Image (cartoon, rainbow, N blue to C red; front, side, top):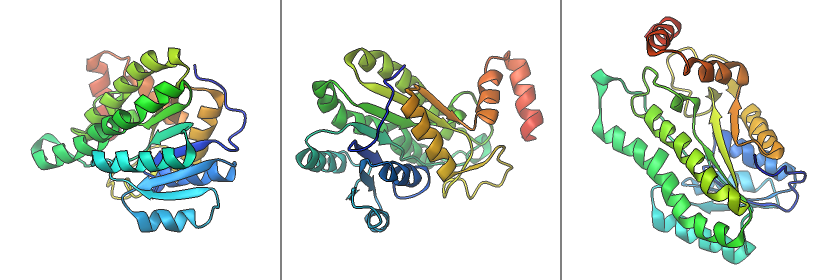
Length: 255
């Protein structure tokens, strides 16, 4: 559904949300494969620490909630590189929430980071990538966006929106020779999940997630999801009648 990538050497890749977890490990893997990678996030010191290990790495601070920050970083990269081959929007946040602990401030914070921030990135990158008529955009969502789950009253809907966004974006830009990668992880061992107080089925490490992402892009996949022993179960579950789906979720989670 997207072009196959045979060689990462010399590819210019901007990863937004690269200071830890999936973003960091994906950056490290792509750098070892010969790509030029700009690592962006709010924590510049952490980015510089990672970049110090790789001559082809750039560390550039970005706040996904700050449109001017994204514009400034993008302008700097365009001046330095001339064009960008791939943008990976990995930045995101999680806040456990159920109906009896509803918190509007947390709702707004997650919408700003997980959804509005993605749109702000697209606002900045789309004009140039459309003009150059090549390249790719990858957005990290979550299988939590496939259907409703306990404790995901805000996180799940933001990721459901990302799934719809990626599908719509693909329809718009793929005919213009631009790749779109919808990346839906299951449970990955990262700083974002370390506070979870429930069992996380099929939990994998961040380096394993990075390998799955890079392999998926290499193959030209649109929907990159992992680990498949877990994500395929959720994809199947969303096809069940609601009575069966809700019963199954309650039985499996105990919630």
